[in-house]
Length: 451
Image (cartoon, rainbow, N blue to C red; front, side):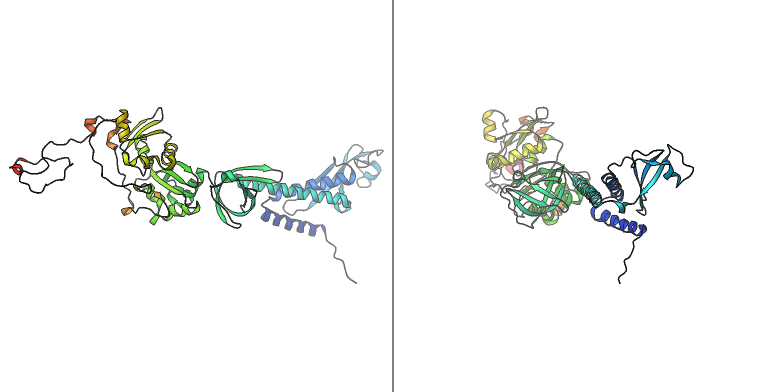
């Protein structure tokens, strides 16, 4: 004959404590919240069993999970409501000193509850656990708003993509995808959390692949100097899937901001380019001088002259004739991104156009006849297909084109800007080889050589 093992109340409390400890670890829900849910469920069970629970009190020990349920009843001569009252005779069987009008506590055994009351109590506990679980997940991802996380592509929902972020799913809308980008199930991608909303079914998380801050956060993850605040990303402009321009500044004179972002053999910037499926990234030096900043922003194009109006936020830029298309860029992209990066409305003209419009002072300058295509890189970090310029000793030389012509946004006079050319003959009278090439600052020969 089999023997049945009778569980004591202490055994039940110990099992309850173990269950709550597991829930606390797995669901990240505090034990206090779970104990409160159990307390409410017991009160609900009493209400379902007795019809009311206004006089029911629950006492729980948070350390042992031992609990007691009491019904507080008023001692009366004649009982009208047995749920709220107890007769004087019955009360004096427990305490012969009790008087009418006093309150007596009567313990209620939870095992006496009916099946329906027990099921309702269970549902109350489960509902509270679900609510707390949703709240914990919401708080977790709300704290990651405006940050980058790694997600796993699950499936396409119409034209949107469902992405698993670990404990919750996010939605990548079609208008937040990079144009032409296609994902496969189980593919791991970096996304930027735009917003987290609390709903009855759990948090609704919206993510993006096109936001400019995505590039900034990726550099913070990849570049230690940016993460530590030594190098600052002062401004960023992006056309997702095509090109990004980023202006950086170093708080340490011994740290080159562009070099730090590029990394050894371009490792850092190329890693980010790969995450963005080959999107080009231009990294330039930030300058507090608006004219120099605009000059840098128009890289890789060379600039002759920049006149910037800080109040109106406008700038007039003159470039060599053969650099005009490069300065504007394909479909105006280079100029458009430079304007977003600097916050200035930029008017770009070629040297010839500027002369004809009278916006450019006359001067004589020889330009080398060099072909510049759109993939030209002048050391400010235009990267494509993993190619980049190598810089000696990690230093980036900033070539100045017309820099001396600007002082606080003012254009200097033509006499200060132009180079004086001597009217002396370029060749000696005896027909010998010229000592200097024509077009240098000193084309004249001294008197002894002429003789």
